[in-house]
Each structure stands twice: as C-alpha cells, then as structure tokens.
Length: 108
Image 1 (tube, one colour):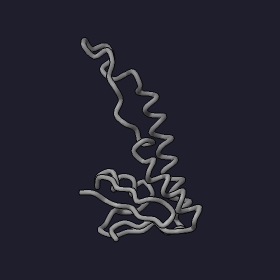
Image 2 (spheres, helix red, strand yellow):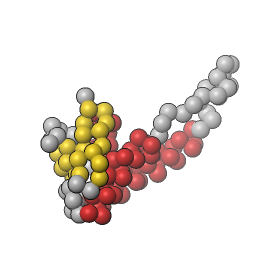
Image 3 (cartoon, one colour):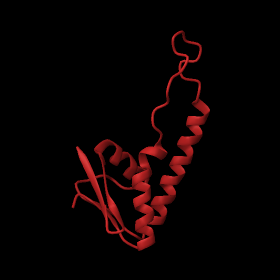
Image 4 (tube, one colour):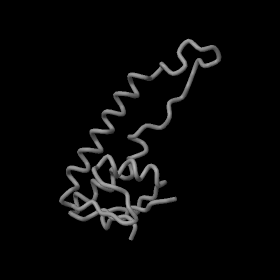
C-alpha cells in the first residue's frame, strides 16, 4: 500500500507503507489512516529524523566492507540503500513545512 504525504510548502511525497511507518515512527508519530505533523512539532520531528540518519550512517560505516568478509565468491557486496537516501524526500518536505509554518498531512 502507498502513503501520500501532503504539504502546501512542497510537492506530495509518496512511499510504501512500511517505509512511511518507519519514518513516521522515528519522528514520534503512528501511521494511521490519517495523521498530521503540526508545524509546532516540525523542529522536533526534523531533529529526530536527522539524528536517526547520523546514527544509520555511523553504523553503515562501521559495517562497510565486513559483509561476507573472508567468504569465497563474495569479494564485493553492495550495501543496501541507507536511511539518508530513503528519507530524503520526507525530510525535505518537513524542512519546507517548517520554513512555511505549515503542517504535513497524510490520509487526506
């Protein structure tokens, strides 16, 4: 299922439900049929998401090159896409909403 985030300050952001649930959870919300991140909550939501991205990047750097280390036939293993890439459109929307003092909505 797809979830569409809407905001007057940015284009709609559409993502799969499992990613939407994960990102909304990071910022302290639950993904229901409808929801809102109010402009009053925007600063905290952005900080939480940025902090999670920093943590993800650190963990990825620590593990880089260690996947299948020493196994035959696994000289190079590509890491999956990180949180920074997956969350960028959503984070960009949150920042735009903060600049414009508007809410981010879903399920409307």
